[in-house]
Length: 235
Ligand code: PEP
Image (cartoon, rainbow, N blue to C red; front, side, top):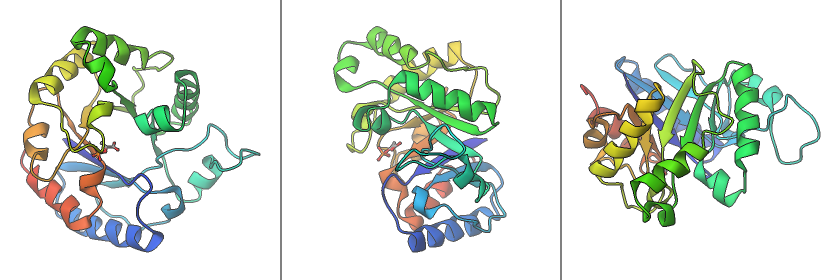
């Protein structure tokens, strides 16, 4: 089954998130062949009424139940809304918020232990991509250090940093070569992310080794997101 995930990043209010979720849930009522995840901001997590293949996840949380970690949320806050899905290792957290591989691995182990579905992101920056496939894969494999890739509820997302939010989608050849290399080592669903758009989502999701897409910018307008879901129908 194709997996499509929407990462809101720092976008949408509580009101617009609610509208988005109810719009997507309604569309998915009659669509059973796609698994959809939406990652709103922490302030927009709530007890949404969902009766479809739609799951709400957290973009981030600290590896703690509760405590003194100013600015962070833990499982006490996630439990309030029944959140059991989390995004870990997103490049914006690695590169802008400065999360190290060690911190990411600690977070991964914590949420794995609690049985969360984990969407784990990996991907290389432009200067690494420019060094070729071997360097790219070497960089990506470093992002698996400390990560149990045999974990049952793991979904991977290959997101080249240079393609995220830039409008520059990786070429089919780039995607296929990285995905097949990762797939040969790790037998888990593998999404592609990085400037996936309404018009290219179907073609990307039909590539060998691509099990779906993690989408930022193009997913934020609810009608566009539903169009994305319509475009991958039947794959
Ligand atoms: C992302 O944030 O995971 C992402 C892929 O963003 P965009 O679709 O905007 O490139």
